[in-house]
Image (tube, rainbow, N blue to C red; front, side):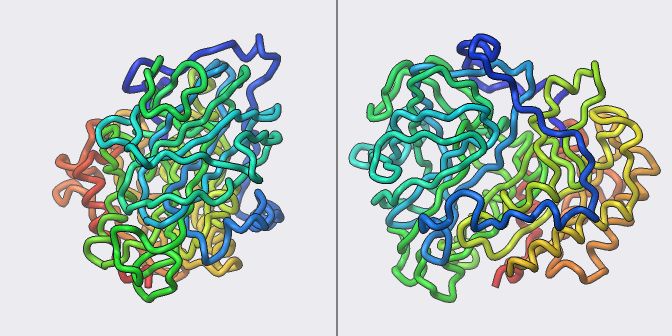
Length: 470
C-alpha cells in the first residue's frame, strides 16, 4: 500500500545525506514499469532461489533458519541519500534464536560495487539502539576477511558468527562504508530507529549518531543455527524436533505486512505478533517469521507513476511486482517452509493515483496472480496460505469505489472457498466493522481508513490459525 503522498517521514532527524547522486556519477536504478501479469510467471522464476546469491556457501538448507529479513527496493531519482566514511548501526528484531548467525548484505539495486570496510554485530541494549550489550560484540567476516565488496545486483551471506541469539532479541548490525556510497538499495519504511555515525565506529560499544533514520540500508537478512540460548535444546533452530524448529514462515505483502502506522521501534507488526504467538502459545521458538512486506507493493505490476505526477517522488519504493519478486523474497529464504500472502489492495487502489488509470484490474486478473504464486510455491515445496484483503471504504487515499469493492469481495470469496491455497487467513473478517463491513473497525483504524493500528495488527495475528504451520 502506498504511504503518504510524499515518502514517509523519518521519526528522528531525517534521512542521512551525503554527496549527491550526480556528484557521484551514479544514476538511480529505476524499477521497470512493465506489467507482469500472471501468465508470465514462468519467465520470472527462471533463476532458482538456490542460485540467487551463493547458496553454496551453506546459508541455505536445514542447518540455517531465517530469523529476520526485509525486502529491498530501489529508490527514486529524487532520493539523494548517500554515505561516505560513515557507520550505519541498524537494529533488527529476531524471531528464532540460535547459537550462531550469518548476515546477508545486499547490493541488489546498486550500479557500482558496494565497498564495505567492516561489519560487526552484537545484541542491542534495550531501549538504546546506539549501544551494544557488553561482551556480545562480534566481527563479521566474508570468506575470512573483515571487508567485502559486492558487485552490482548481488547479495552475499557472511561466514558464521558465534553469538548466542535469543528469540525476540534486538541485534545491532554495524556497517562501515569507507567511500562515497549512494543508498541505492533500501527498505524504506523499517518502523525502527537506526543510526548514522561519523567514521569507522563499528566496534564502538556505543555510537554518537549524526542522524537517526527509519530505513534499512544494504541489509537483507539474518539466519541462525543451533538451539536458542533461552530454550531447551530440543526446541531450538536446527534441532529437527517436531516443535517447528528449523523452519521459517515468510509473510509476503504490502504496507500492512510491512507494519505501516505501527509504533516505531515497538515491533508490533502482525508478523512480529505472530512470532510471539508461535513462541508463547505453540511452544515453537525455533520457527522464524520473516517479513517480506513492502509498502505500496502490487501483486501484478511494478511501479508505474504517471509522468509528471507526485508519485514519481516515491513510487520506486513500492518494489517489483509480487509475482516478480516472489523467487527472491520468499523462495530464497533459509528454511522457508510456509508463506502467507496478503496482496491486492494496491492493484485496486493505485490506478488513477499512483499509476495510470488504464491499470485497473479485474477479479480474474488478481486471482490469476495469486495462482501464479501458488504454482511457484508448490514447485519449490512450500505450503502457501492466502489472506483475505482488508476493507477500505472511507479511506483517505481514494482507494475505495463500489466497483473495486466488488472485485475485493470476489477475490476474498475465491481465497476462502476455492481450495487452491493450502490454507487461508481471514484478515477481512478479523478487522472489519460488523456494523459497516466494508470499513475497518474504528478501534483498529490507524486514522486513514486503510492501515490497521497496533491493536488491529494484534487482531490480525490472532486470526492466523497456528495449525497451518505444522
